[in-house]
Amino acid sequence: MPGVGISHYEKHVSIEGERPLTWLAPELTFAAFSQTKAQNIRMTAFNFSASMTLASAPTTLTAPSPLATFHSAHYLRHNQRRQEHLATLGLDIAGRNVLEVGAGIGDHTSFFLDRECRVVTSDARPANIEKLRERFAAQKKVSVRQVDLDQPLLSGLGDNEMFDIVYCYGLLYHLGRPAEALQYLAAHCSGILLLELCVSFGDDEAVNLVREPQADPSQAWSGIGCRPTRAWVFSRLRENFKFVYVPRTQPWHEEFPLDWSPTSAASWPAKQLSRAVFVGSRAAIALPSLMDKLVVNHTRC
Ligand SMILES: C[S@@+](CC[C@H](N)C(=O)[O-])C[C@H]1O[C@@H](n2cnc3c(N)ncnc32)[C@H](O)[C@@H]1O
Image 1 (cartoon, rainbow, N blue to C red):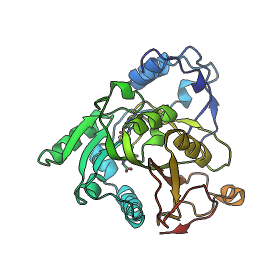
Image 2 (cartoon, helix red, strand yellow):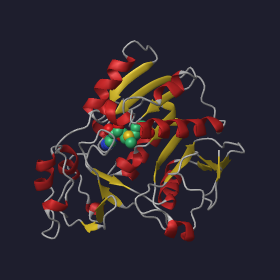
Image 3 (tube, rainbow, N blue to C red):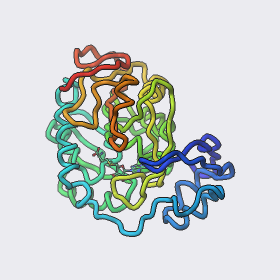
Image 4 (cartoon, rainbow, N blue to C red):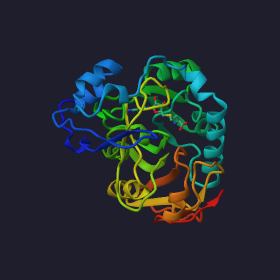
């Protein structure tokens, strides 16, 4: 939201896999953060402290194509494992009105279309939007919008537009303002929010901001993401939904830990992402696949 100060951004910011850096930019406004898209402009606009050198900033010289990124073998497999997991949960999805955010080039959209849903699919990044428009031009049940969840008030959603299902897979951790984004998504959700994201180990509530390479079509459009703990995500969901669940199972993919204990955290490979799935709901859901609290151990689906 233009002009809104972000003193809470004065936190530790790190490049994935590197040690956290302290971001000292108290005068930085969110408008400057989210609206200066070019890397060089962003680095000067941010007025980093002297201890944060430009050499430590992510370089974004060549942009990979959205298709090459999202259709890599890694990505295609990742999609299959997450969606087969979602299908096992037994949620009431067929025929619903769905908002998909951070859709990339729309590889998850057919999950809902094949279940006879109507889908508003969206992304912040123009190159991805272009692909979405190409891909779904002939699909009457799909509408493509540009929705930037880091500045949602400028997005292509109507104020009163409501959706039975909000599908937010692979996006929240690419946002610099995830709490505000969840609030916005909840305001447009009359049924359930399906949320999947990279999280950090730990029992405390921490949002853990990180820098991401903005030129990568799968990363943060603003250049700032986060790796919150599960406790942080669960609490923010509880602020927005009466009922919050986690699946009993995890997808059959190595990025989804089965054990969230400190021992497991200590032995988790440093470069390996760790991910989790959450469901926020307006009504109670009585399904054996869901639990209404965070647990340490899961099984595979
Ligand atoms: C990792 S991809 C996820 C794609 C797909 N949903 C999935 O789970 O595989 C993250 C997507 O979020 C989009 N994104 C990044 N920042 C965003 C923002 N501020 N608002 C909305 N989408 C954003 C990226 O452009 C990218 O398409």
